[in-house]
Length: 202
Image (cartoon, rainbow, N blue to C red; front, side, top):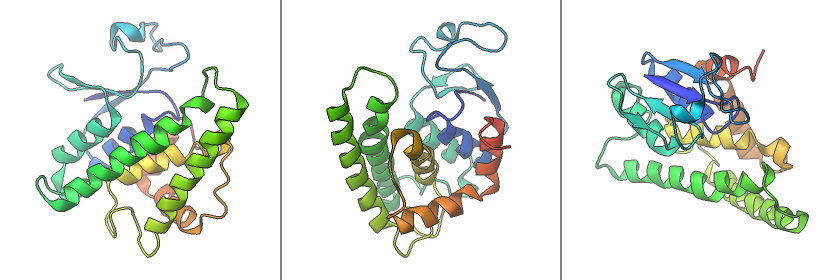
């Protein structure tokens, strides 16, 4: 498998999940600012939409949505328990988290990364994001991870998005459970490896 990523972008989530899975893969940098690979290849010739993540399977089939990619990867390594079994209620809970993170948190950060959003709109979005994160903080009380004792793909996605707190201007200090959770996740070997590979850690 090949994962196309941009350092620190939402593609860090599947990068972490691939590391956690233990499956063989190649990570290829596709910077979203230049859309050019290290060898000079125009990234649009690989993914016409130009964004990351983008997963290319060994047989040439592709997946391009992060929340779907992480579920696919998890299902290729069921022994790692990165995603609950298909058909179980817990599976739908994990998908609920992925959808919540994608629509309420990930997209909520969009105005802070380019675009023409004015300060008033950004302030409103920041307040909304903090309210959503307060909810997450409450859900993490007494839990090691979003799904309980088991690390899942939802944790990889949430960790990636909450990495953006500083550039977005979100103060996470009051969110003790979230901060404790971030500390736990940041120390996982797979997370450290993915962060180092993207140049986010020295």
